[in-house]
Length: 156
Image 1 (cartoon, rainbow, N blue to C red):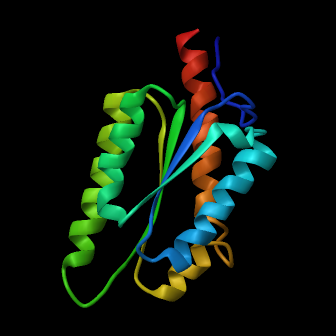
Image 2: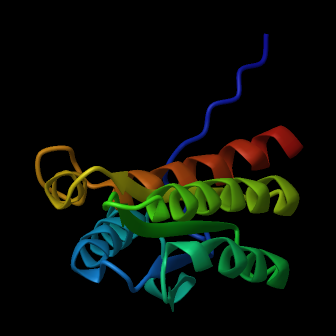
């Protein structure tokens, strides 16, 4: 029986992080968590990490697609925060960000990690950006690194 399991250490990985500027008071923590995980746990060189800022979560799928199409990256991490408000805007932005990022991953055949918080409140977002519920940016980075290795092992 052959079992494929990915490891996280990926020193030669080239990783792009697409991050939304909207709600940057939360997203900055997600970014720091992702970069810390990439460098400290994944052993990714600083020169192999590219950060691309975009206006909001809605713009993440297009940015991820353009990054994937360059062929320069082994994985992409999409980071952002969508906080529910009093209108249906939340559903549109969160839904399109989620389905668009998933679509890019399937079509590009490289990992596109989903690090977009979709929360009911600012407090929930803060909890998921490095306090009570961990840092979802770091989790997305670790997922991207593990998936790089899983895909390499499948193709080997």
